[in-house]
Length: 288
Image (tube, rainbow, N blue to C red):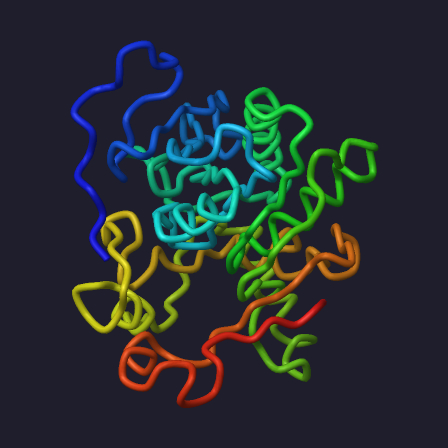
């Protein structure tokens, strides 16, 4: 699945706030200014991407929120949703994907609540363009932690609308260590995060995820490996602070009945070889 080349220019009469996007003529983007970085790395912004081939009066809107070492490239999802009557927007959070700038530590923040700013702005744009239309938020990996916490805070202040539900794809809620090790590891990691939040932990990396998904290897999808690098962007000391592993998304975040978690159980290569009809389903959906 190849990604189209960028549109050379914006169409006549287009909204000047929306510019051509790297995904091609069916997508536009706009900056969401965030001002000075609270973590001291200068001016920052987020990026909102819009699918231009979506229905003009959609049944609903889906806002896609990426995870760590990722960005919005999901043309296949936007096209499928459009065929089902939905409009799609994707956001690249501060210091992520399209929002990365020289001098910024990629995918870095010392407080997950700061993502509320760009997510609120994205929702405001969607409401202005599709008033009264319900919004589903689809989040992957660490986005599956960020989004429930954000929606939980909106719910607590009576501002949940127009969000009506979330889809969590392989959500990351906490550091993946044995429970018996937490009493020992948590204080160590929390202290390290407080003293050296920018320190990149010397953890092993793997390119298996990219190899299994990228069209140049065993996968079906085309994405920019400079924005979604094979080895990831690394794990920083701050990720062990209270704002990350102990955020308590399942306990204190938004948890409506319409929240589902997806887990893949086979590779793209296996799907092409045998197909889901010849074996176990390639993904499972379970309520959480």
